[in-house]
Image (cartoon, rainbow, N blue to C red; front, side, top):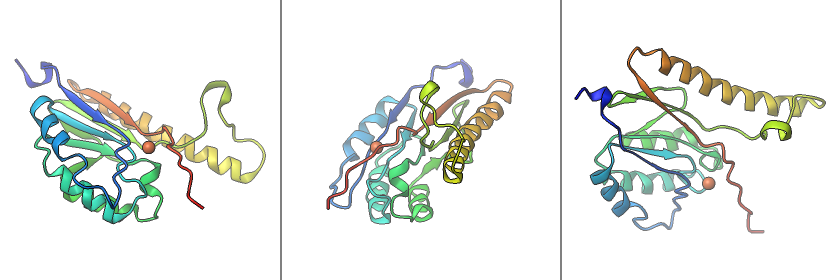
Length: 177
Ligand SMILES: [Fe+2]
């Protein structure tokens, strides 16, 4: 059977929220997933506060995963303002980050974006009034457009299948005072 016609087993996880104090939080799970799935997708909030030390712990866990890994970051991964370093650590561990990239595995094109707040349908925030609201909505639209463009490119492949990942759940947490 051609590679592109075979069903692809995709394992998907989100909200790993790995912390500096986490001890081997996902090692066994990633090893088990490697025996049962073809690709692992990590769909945002991979770290709890976006600290490089948290990413290093996750990177160690990812080394127990022996299947291809794709992923996107979530809003928590931006919290400490060190996203470039977090991305570098995770890429070095073999994770294919999809922000601004399309990654193809086993005949399936993966596209994904972090997403942004703004609501849906009749509850959607509109670009009206204050400048800061307009900038907020512009970021929401830009994220959605990036995903649409990625899907358009993925569909343009003659015999490609595709999957989209989004992490726009906006996980919020309450800070201790
Ligand atoms: Fe989350």
